[in-house]
Length: 289
Ligand code: HMG
Ligand code: MG
Picture 1: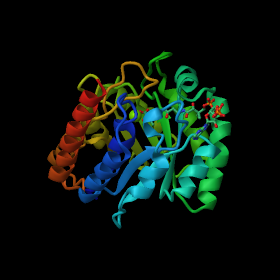
Picture 2 (picture 1 turned 180 degrees about the vertical axis):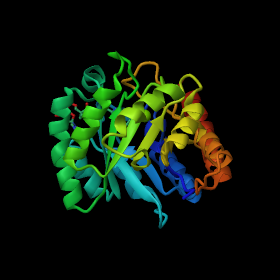
Picture 3 (picture 1 turned 90 degrees about the vertical axis):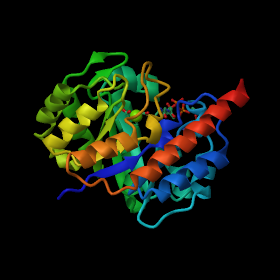
Picture 4 (picture 1 turned 90 degrees about the horizontal axis):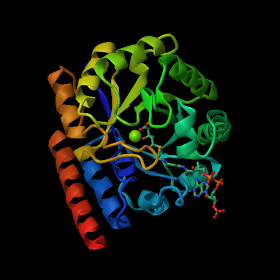
């Protein structure tokens, strides 16, 4: 009853925006540190085009190098069938497809309209499920788009419904640029409750304006029981100007505990993993100057 599920997205969302090249061995070590903190799910990398996100061009090597902890799901972002081929070859446990609630971000992030992206990911969902892999469906820009501005919750509902029609197992709502406040979270879930219960969704908050914890607390009140976060608040999206890190895992986990729930992770170890990665990033940046 009191369980809250935390997915660690630091190795993917946390590192994808980093300009200086992070050695593959460091990424593997990072995931191994996170595994020791007992996350039920870690989003390890992306099987996207390296022309679009050069930092994660070593997805196969990272997936192959990590030590898998029984009980942790090791997932990855997949934009198209080519990405799925790589993900299957690297034996991911779960596939995350992604789409935007808005046309502007869809074009900038995935070089296609919302309809085109839906058509692109449809066979990814079908093939992933044929391979018996669960599929997470991200919907970005659920509050505001860096290109199209404020997003009407009704628009998000439409995209959520289309993702459910494709057969995704989980809807993950992304406040890509950290524009949410608690009331906008309430409005979003009021609208979405018509097609899916809040406790069946995951909320993916970025902390651009320092409101992510307040938003998460409101979401807990509404009934949301699954959140993404990145240790140390690492992160940002290269195609969402102004986006900052995800809500910090350790801060969110403490807020979850304070609200009377159990996030089922070792918060101290998670915080140490974030500190360790921040130190690696500092030395990587220094070496690249
Ligand atoms: P495109 O340029 O239209 O694709 O990109 P294309 O099919 O024309 O291919 C172009 C080149 O990329 C070709 O290579 C393909 O082979 C190659 P070339 O022939 O020129 O040598 N290619 C690939 N290579 C490796 N893996 C692949 C792949 N696909 C094509 N899977 C595409 C379309 C979707 C591929 C591109 O736009 C892309 O990769 N976009 C991903 C951008 C991204 O990763 N953004 C960040 C993640 S989303 C996010 O952060 C939001 C989230 O956190 C939630 C939230 O906060 O809201 C999830
Ligand atoms: Mg994100």
